[in-house]
Every structure is written in C-alpha cells, then in structure tokens.
Length: 485
Image 1 (tube, rainbow, N blue to C red):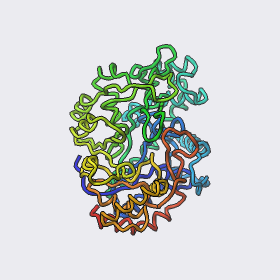
Image 2: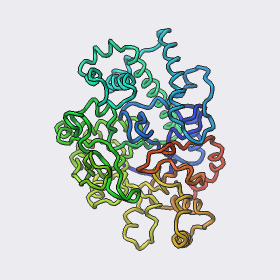
Image 3: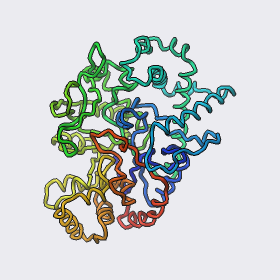
C-alpha cells in the first residue's frame, strides 16, 4: 500500500455527539468530517460497524456483513422525533436501542402502508441479507438467546428459506429494510468523506462471534461440538501486558481444513466486503494469520492453550491475486514471533507503533523496527489508557526518564499530552493516528475499552458535544503543518 505522510483521528461512530444518545450516520458525522478537514486530518479510523454482540463489543458481532441499526440517522427519515440522552457522557445501549426501535418500527409500518418499501435490488446486491433476516427474526422469536438454544424448528430455518420467508414475511422484510437504510446512509456519508479527501480506516476482527449469523449459517466452517453445536475450542491470547491469565475471548476457532477446500473464500470474502465499506482495512489480531492461540472451551482461562499455524501466505496469495487493490494495515501488537513480521513485510503491509508500548531509548534494537515510514503510529489505541492517564500511572522515575528523553529530542515538555503529540507527529511513520481522548487531553474516565473486562463502561464513552474538539482545531492544524502531514 502506497502511503503518504498524513494523520487521522480514531473515534468510533458510537462516540459522536447526537440527539439520540449514540453517534450515528447523521449530521454529527458530517460535522466531524468538516472538522477533520479543517484540522488538517485526512484519515478517520472507526471500529467495526457490525451489530454489537456480547458486552456491546464490536469484536463479538452478530454478523460480519450487517450493520447495527443503532447507527441509523432517524432525522434523515424525516419524522419529528424527540431527543433522547443527548448529553449523556456514556452510551446506554439498551435504552438507546429500545428508544430507536420504537420509531424505526413506526416509520417502517408507515412506509409499508404507503407501499414505499422496495428491497428487491438490495437483496440482489447483498446475498448475505436473507440469511441475516432469518437469523435475526429467529433470534427475536427466541428472546435473543444464542442460536444453539433456539427451538429445534427455528434452528432448521436455513434448510427451508423460502417457506420461512413466506411465513415470516413482515419480520424478514423489516430486517432487510433496516440494512437497506443503513447501507444507503453509510454510502452517502462515505462519498462525502471522500469528497473532502478523507479516507476511512475500518477494523475487521480476525474471528467472528459464536452467537452470529456467520456461525449459524456456516457451522461446518468452525470447530463445534457435533451434538451441542457449542465451540470445542475458543480463541484468545496467552498471558500478556493486559492480563496475567491471558485473554479468553470465547470466539469459535475456524475449521481451516474445511475453509481451505474453498480456497479460504469464507475469510477472503469478509476481507473484501470490508474493503468495499472502508478505504483501508485494519486486520485486527493479524498474528493469527501466522499462528493462533487455541484454547479448549472447557478451560476457564486462556493460560492453557497452544499455538497453531494459521493460513498465512496461502490465504494472502489468494487474496492478492483475486483483489490486488485492497489496502491493509496489520495489527501486529504484542510479543510476536519473527515469522509474523516476515509475513507482514512480504506483502508490504504497514504495521503499528503504539508509543505507550514502544517509547524506548534510541539504542534499543526494537526502535529501528518500528520507527520507519511503512508504519501507522499511535499514542494509544481503543484498548489503551488515554495517554494522560497512562503517563500519570508511570513511576516517578519513568516520568522523569520519559520527560528527559522527549527534551533530548528537542521537544518542549509543556505537558505530557502536548509533548507526546509532537513526538507522535514527528515520527517517520507515514500515518499518525490520535485517539480523540488524547487530542482533548482526557483521563481514565474516557477510556473506551479495557481488554478482558465486561462492564457498563467498555465501549460506552462518547462526546457530549464538539466544542472541546473545535477549540483544538487550530492546534491540530499547526501540528499537521509543522510535521508536514
């Protein structure tokens, strides 16, 4: 991927200010695009847009293809709808979802009565949407339980799709209409971003959620128990920086023996679909393409597992041959074996330099591996403490060490955030991405996600208004000009 020297902001759609308690594809997204342009940014990194699953995590989605209806811009549907949780500092997902659903159903039924809904062309262009409608209708019929806990006749719905659609026409049509609205609104927003010269970086998780249409409709592609259909093995990582017992994610492990028979199309199709939605695809957990951590589902932690060889070069050779123009970023964080870097570099995928992890003395050998042009540099990501909080938690010795090291680079140490933003922008990395929290100088209260934890705070932080960012626009523009981004 050819990379020019530029910068961007990491901010999930959900964290945008809006009238309805969660960011969406509406006016605030367009306003944010304008502010990015004004600040000299040309990249916007977001998190997966797929339907949020367990723990509101975008990395445990109900589908790799569908969008979450929570992102629908209600104002664009031209109905007079009162505001809800407009100034809340956190997203109350259950309350917002319930509120939006009330109006979405009213709008849908109103349009149906006027015979103004036609999803036929959308179905033709999006082959996945029929399976998605079946999955969601059944999920709602079964009190949102996981698909392996549904009534037996509902589990078998995919075997007689036509009959199911005829018996549940309105419910299926509603689910498809939601996706049609979402894709239409996203396409409009994406075109606007491109017109401003702003590219979208979107995440694609390596794994899919167990409670998902992906697994329900493709059970042979995963290592599942033949009787219960529950995962035999699950994904995660061994003990690391974030957890002493490792991270037990719970995603089912791919049945690569089956997937390989179809030239890895199950995974490649997911990558290509993301490339159509975003301009640049960040492959989350890139190391799993080389080796992945395989845990028995019966293990309570991620400590007891083993590394297994992934699809590696065979998959990427097929992907590149089929879709040569896909732009990919490799999320290559953590303690990795050398083969992961060789795989990344073979295809010239840019890797990631997270300053919170890599700010070391110049003489350390690792420095030369991450301070280079074909790289994406961050102070921290959505999984890290905001930089102000991170720095505050350092020991007095490390604070002194870091501040002295910054001064030795000719950067004035007015404040930790300011100094390290200058450092980030000064790096060789072609892309410099800043979390919104670090631009605003926010603390631990604004942390987006703490890996390994499931609570009401994870994924819930949002901006109540754009005012604090607007006050930083001139400063951001000066940074971009000074460091030629």
